[in-house]
Length: 328
Image 1 (cartoon, rainbow, N blue to C red):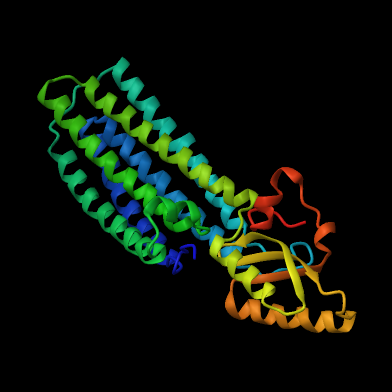
Image 2 (tube, one colour):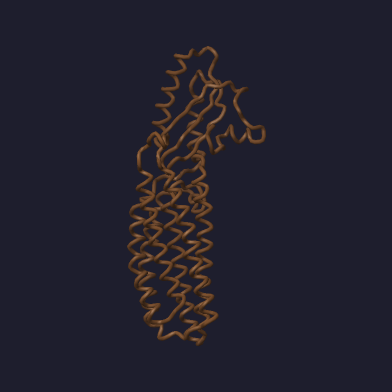
């Protein structure tokens, strides 16, 4: 059986922990940048502001995603969280990476001598401790959720972006702090102010890479991704186990929210099954499916002859295994 994420990340704990850390250290970084004239420290301050805004947007997205379904949105608002996750990725790239690279380039073209870096070192040390605490919370929660899956596989399969976004942000922040520290030390030790600007550009490159990665994952969720293969296999097994089912033509699923799945099932019923018996069977199957897979919010079971099932020849084998991402 395919491995699945075994638990849901406690997003509120992760997001509030990251928000508290970023707000505190953001102010300290700007003060240190003003006192030392460090380009990389100013970049880190912008980084903290962007991260704080990102956590606010994700919390807002979570709140909006919990709205109940209505006539205009019969499958609910769950995918609004995916939209805000994509916006977060764009902000990291446009503001975080953009400002960092621009500030570094400006500092290289017009280098400014750095004053005593002691204040910067103190702020970096405090920031590293706070960011490390936020990173530890995010890492612990994601480790619980991923179960036996590998880290990258778990991130790729995750349908809840808040947890892995904070994990990536905090990882980038820790890397940025290390680079800023090296840049400040080298700039002061060798009396070469442009090194600090180069460190700022390096931080911007890291942020750009993280933003592209997050945009890629968020885009897949926003467009619509299928349920975990183990969930699809469970659906197929339960439906196929009914004596009156000749074959399961296909199982097509799509996540409408992190914990909400729409499933469209095409099954070939025995010709002796009457309309009334078929309705009773479908109701029983739906009850059994929801008991086995609580995240199934909507189930559509369509009686259909196997030879009449609409499957494109180029991917009929994959569709039969439930690999299509959108329902008919």
